[in-house]
Amino acid sequence: MRTCVSILILIAPYVVYAEEPVTSEDMDALPKPAIEAPAKGEVEILGKIPDWIVRWEYAQVLSYLGRHHEAIAEYRVVLREQPDLLKAKEELVKVLFWKGDLSGAEEALRSLPASESSDLQLIKAHLLTRKGHHREATLLLQSLVERSPRDPKLRFFLSQSLLWGKDVPRAITELQLLTREHPQDKQLRRHLARALTIGGRHREAAKELAASLR
Image 1 (cartoon, one colour):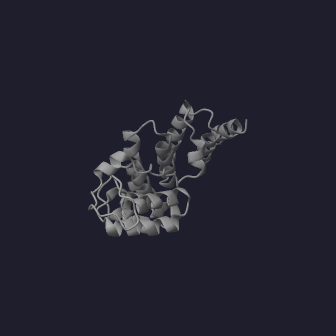
Image 2 (cartoon, helix red, strand yellow):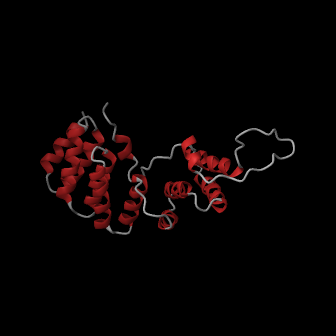
Image 3 (cartoon, helix red, strand yellow):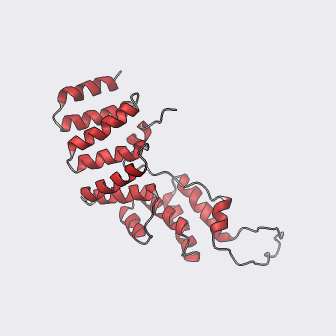
């Protein structure tokens, strides 16, 4: 099946996928809440779900709905009750980023231990780019591409970081590789044409632009 890259590019550089809802495996890894007697009027059932888990799931759903301000408030309540809940901390970074609170996302990211999550690494790379640290952002993205060479969004972000850092020849190379792998993707061709134009390769740029209009 051909991977669609166009949607990723149209909303770049803010592409970060939402977490999946809490699974039973996640539950097993969570700190176990104290067993409480059922409140008056409640039916005692096996596996009663505590309020903090419900609030966590509520925060996730709010983030999926784009209600980021409300989601952030709920995540903060969860983390006051469960300050060592790493997954919730990572999700909070993403929601802050989606909301456009880049300073908040950066502060929350600094409080986390080193993470292998490509989503968090992409956020870090974006924050580095915003600060003008293009070399650091490029090195980070290069490491992600080396780890997942078949992931088109990572290679695309690498190409854009290279452009920001004025390494136009390498940016063109990365975009050419992507267009070879996804020849029907018009958006990729348009981004390649833009890079070719920046590099002064106008004939090649014209060819790519014409192909993207067919």
